[in-house]
Length: 302
Image (cartoon, rainbow, N blue to C red):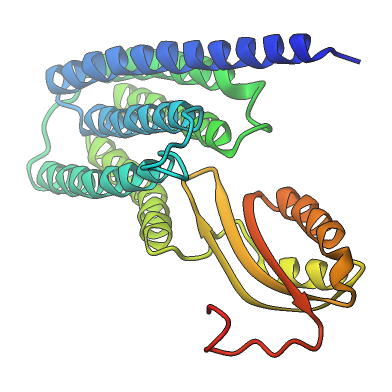
């Protein structure tokens, strides 16, 4: 069994390792976005420019994930009693809005290329996109070990893994253009990438808006939680349940619980908190009351 000192050392090492992964991943992708963007203009490729836009969006996503990771480590204070994690939701909302503008620009440029097709450098597309495959795959591997421990880390891993697949698609388009001369493939790939970005952006925008309005996070099944709480020994009823997100990786809940024996309240609360943690709810305020207690508007908050 590890001592407290060993556990603290392991936790500190994990934080340092992940911070390094975010720094390295962000810098690698930012440099590649610049190179790919320049190559896109030089080769006259909408596919490369679209992929550069996609990689830029995920570089921003990496920065947001890094921000969430750092903010989660900050201690709450008297002004911010829940800490600073709510800022990650606002950042995600801003990120989604910017991405929608980028998607519009990609679509307009792709449509322009349909009506005015121009020669495209297939070789440059192949080599630049191939470098993108390597960089995105390598970045994804930086987060692979910790992806199951934190949803925020898992999100970073999935973003970069998807980027690698998109870059593979651009490589294939470059090969097709080189050997067939069909430049029409380039704007088609641009529209496909725009569609991929839109799907992920729409989900990000929708969930960010939901969370900013204190909606129950999509990852939370409130019916299942109610069912499990009612099955806890000593619980006779529940009401006034409120679940909301404190940030992109933390959730909170308040609930009133009617108990058979008020003397067993602390045991009941402990059991409920344990099952809530399994559902990703680390902050829970539980108010207990006798099973025959009548909770109404005058003496009970809704």
